[in-house]
Image 1: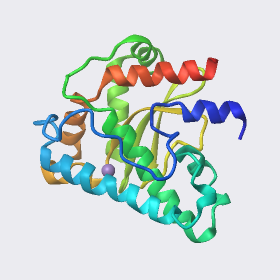
Image 2: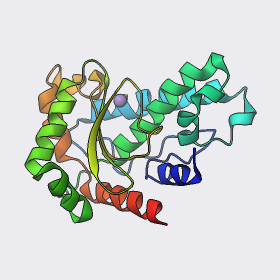
Image 3: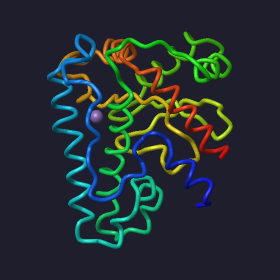
Image 4: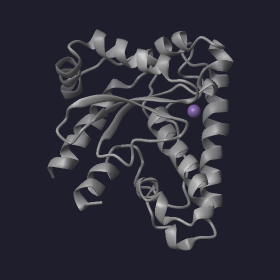
Length: 226
Ligand code: MN3
């Protein structure tokens, strides 16, 4: 891992720099604020219980190993093979769960923002149109078999690419910044939308924080160019 990759990847507004003991970043809105698009019960179960569980399990796994307590979330995810074999799988799954959920929950807003700025320009450049981008992201989210995530990423030059990952795999090991992420585990929508992942996607899309997404994109570029 070069210094450049490390710096690039750790500065992606994903709280990837935090170290043990890990905590969930407080929501920048109330659990009821995203209604009717994502209801309060879903938010409570998803954030208060499930996301917190990843944090708790990650901390428990690392507690006996103080030599890793200064490792950032991103570094843990990039160097799983350097951890004791007994905790590699647990750290992979739970650090991944923290990494993905931080981006997901911090990337939502009740403010009904619109795509803007450099990110909006890049979306039109790289996907042909905003509508085409949305259609391709939705197709990726719909086609994810089983639990996982669909992610808009930027490479170091600012070019956008859609990536899907299964379970709590992440893009942290790769030299890309996550810009927008959609959780397509059933727990993200089943309480409200039952099996209608399609309707969930459409409503999730309405509460994407485009101001935050644009900041994620600008930070990605700026951190690379420093
Ligand atoms: Mn989830």
